[in-house]
Amino acid sequence: MAVNTSSTADKLRKKATVIGGGAVNTVSSSPAKKEQKGGMMALLEKMEPEIQKALPATMRSDRMIRLALTAFRANPKLKQADPATFVAAVMQSSQLGLEPNTTMGEAYIIPRYNSHAGQMEATFQIGYRGILSLAHRTGQYQSIYAEQVYENDRFEYELGLHKKLVHVPADLPQGEPKYYYAVYHLVNGGYDFVVWSRAKVQLHAKRFSASLKKDMSTPWKTNFDSMAKKTVLLDLLKYAPKSIEFSQQLSLDNTVKKDVEAEPERVIIDMEPEEEQQLGQHHTENDFEFGPEPPVNDYYNY
Image (cartoon, rainbow, N blue to C red; front, side, top):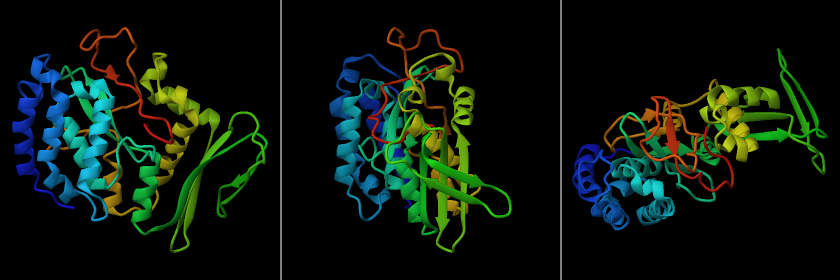
């Protein structure tokens, strides 16, 4: 849904300057920054007309604001983030019609330390269920899902001219999952699937997760199966029939917007800070610092 981002951004910059105790893109330790909790409520309430315009007709702006404030208050590092990036993330969530930081796992607003800018930023991330919701809204997919295969499941698949996939789960799973797969069925009868072995997923994680390379906390350690399912789903969707709108929606995963008018910038989100690390210390251009993980009820992060 179209939103007047120019006027929205102007309002945001003016209000965020008051909240941050200075320029919008400045992390301040002033007394005004300590009052950011109340200031963020005032800012979101000021932005409520724009949030309502962005939301689908079935969603209410007051609920979105409550969810955003809950996420903001629950995470100290979000309070340290540039206020403009937080509100921009709320707007992204609103435009996609996905509720952030809930047990549904549709979307998350994650704090990220940007070493280039020297400040915390709020990053928008689409959860596994959010991807499924966006896919179903297109009307193209009869079904779309991802599953894990345990050692004692019956599992067969074939590629080639006549692709085939058979999975009969065991009554009582044993051991670790050995395969992960994602499937879609189109309303026109078309279908496709991808299968990754656990070893392939592990290689992917080691290649793309900087936190694993540094032996830091990451959802690849705490919630490997969920990360694996999202990975195979995104791999499946790379070549799946998609509308331009759906493709654009998926491109917002793991992005930061400097304000609601700015273009989203893609970042890697799977790192958490070590307890002893301090903001602004010992960062290279590839080092990012993140706040606590969102509740692990389903799938998130990539």
